[in-house]
Image 1 (cartoon, rainbow, N blue to C red):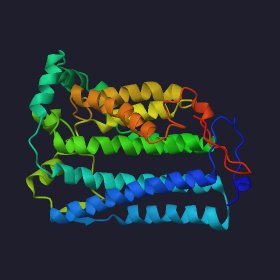
Image 2: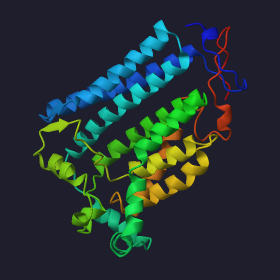
Image 3: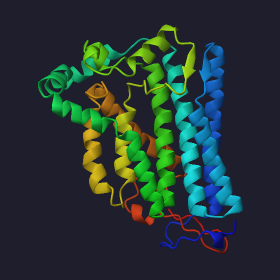
Image 4: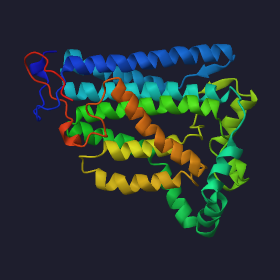
Length: 329
């Protein structure tokens, strides 16, 4: 594909070529491949099998097919980039979930007492908040539950908006920040596993307790098959929900979504306490993983298009004819 075939006219201060995007995508595939190798080794050593979901496999292959179609047959750089980003997010997320289960299977001592003690040290009464929201004012608690469950929908809408407004570089930056943040969280969850505030305070029966059966089963050794059609988020510390809420706020800057995503995701961060059974400490550490991920990306030279860029509207993918221009920091 020539550079003249994918042109997006934006200010020349943030420029990337098709070749550069392809290289960046290759790097992310290498990360996903490395994760898959680690997951395969973990499954083998733990004598655990994985049951792959047909819809996930079909969706992933369909996205790869669309990327190839719009790259080689009916050339459309925008649609090709959308398909590529979505395929990588599907692959990364599913491998990461398997790794999170294998991390929990290490069965290291739970740190719930320490997390609860840290909440107490700053004067936060988790049980009082839960009682107020879920029992005394259930309508508010129900609304927070709904907000907590908007995570996947928000990601989907944001990617549509970023690509429809041709903020390709911002979309790729989101993918990298999503990936690196989760890669920071998973090892921490293995070393410092937590059952969560629902179980610690004995109120799981008043909630959906959606992650507890799998969390307890994988830790007890009774789960020998990880079914990708049934898996759920089992990481409690640090809170990935809180981290992703912050990523969504930052990644939506420069778009019309920002005025909506800012208050919505502030509420999602707050909802993690009761709707997700997270300690305040979980939420705080989850938020802290995002700037840590940004630091990693900066150290590896992936600063262009970062959600922390003070001028996100300038972080656009500019593809033009001629030799590849230098990347401007």
